[in-house]
Amino acid sequence: MQVDADLRPILGPNLVRLDPMRIKQLQDPLVYEAIDKLAKLSAHCLQLRTPLTTCEKLINSDSTFYLSWKYDEEEKVSRLLGFAKVGRKKLFLYDSQMQTYEGEILCLLDFYVHFSVQRQGVGKQILDYMFSQEHAEPYQMALDNPSVTLLGFMFQKYGLSKPVWQNTNFVVFEDLFQSLAAENGFEKPPPEGWSRPQTPRRFGTGSTDTRWLQHAVSGHQSKGNAMAAPVDADMTPQGALSNRAHQAKQRKAHILSSKPLW
Image (cartoon, rainbow, N blue to C red; front, side, top):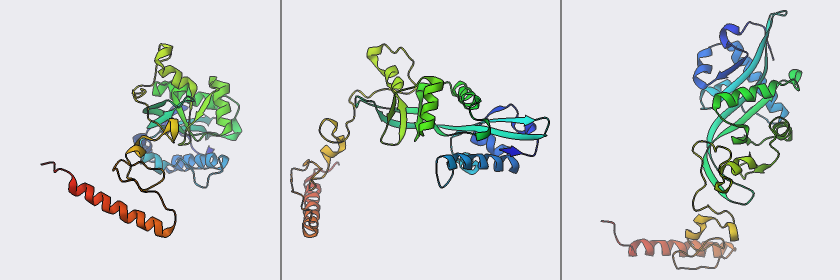
C-alpha cells in the first residue's frame, strides 16, 4: 500500500506499535486512509463484506495495532507492508478432553501482509515484534476465526500443529493447555491470570451437561424441575400457552410462599 509522502516523521521506525491514543494523536489523513485501505485488502482476502479494522474502530477500542512499513528512497514514497491487530479478551475455553479454562488471553483479531511482499518474512517480523511488546509466547495467543492459511503459517513459523476450535470461533493450541496442566509440572509458563476452575463447567447434555439448566424453571424438555412442579412439554400452540400459564402460576405461588428477607 503506497503513500506518496515521507512517513518517517510521523510513524518513526519500520515496525511501530500503535495503541488507540497513539493513533488518535497521528492526526494525518494520509496515514488513516492508507491503514483503512490495507485493512480492506485483508477483508477482501477473507471474503468479508466490511473490514474488521479501521482507524475509527481502533480509536474507540482497546486493541493494539502493529504496523510494518518502509520508505523507498529512490521513489520517495512510503509503503505499508502489513499489520497485526491484537487485544486481550476474557475467554472460556475447553481443551480436547472437555476440561474448561477461563481467563484473559491475548487474541489475534486481524492479520494481513500485502500481496507484493508475502513470503519474504514480513509476517513473522510483525508477530515477533508483537510478542516481544506484549510479553507473550506464540502458544499463549488465541486466533479469532483464522483461515487455513493462518493456521498453516502458525505451524510453519512457530511449530503449533494442534489447533483446538472453540464454539466462539476462536482457536487456541494444545500447547496452551499443556502449560496449564499441573501434572506436567508447568514446564511452560501459563499466561498471566489464567487458571483452570476447581469445578470445571460442563456444556451440553450428559457428561457435558450445562450447569445453569439444572436450576431452570420447569416446563420444557431441556430444563429441570428445580421448583418441584414437573410439566411435560407440549409442542402444540395450545399446549405451549397452557404450559406458560402454569409456569406463571407456579412462579407466583413460589414467590408468595417464600420467607421475606427482612
